[in-house]
Image (cartoon, rainbow, N blue to C red; front, side, top):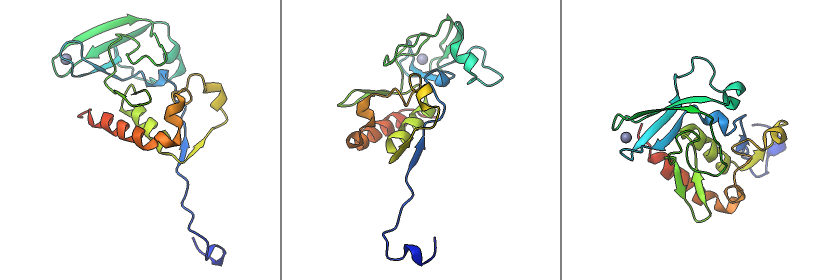
Length: 176
Ligand SMILES: [Zn+2]
């Protein structure tokens, strides 16, 4: 920043830019935090076995059959699942064992949820961003994209503070 050009003008703060990464609902299912069906603490649903390569490869999202393992470190429970991943938009359970998501909370407007902390961070960045951009592929992925399909109340600026508080509550509920 220099020069007389900007002298006397109000300082311009850079916009808080947000780009929705190429993240679909399916891209986040390599780790889903759920409520353990036995001890009700946080358990993880992970690929079984864990993939060696890139778990986000599109082929992995659309595979008709998935193998997943539910693991609870708190009580030692392990369960296995093999079958289709069933996604029902807005349903706050994991797409395999249908256990309640750990990261979900009620707000005055509706339920806020995420599969894992990475997705929660994406949500926080989206809600916190002053400027939202739609990259060229936006329309193509709109129907699948986690951000693109968020309900309207999450996208309203007037709800921002409330949603950010809820996101922070959720994040604090996971002790790593
Ligand atoms: Zn447990």
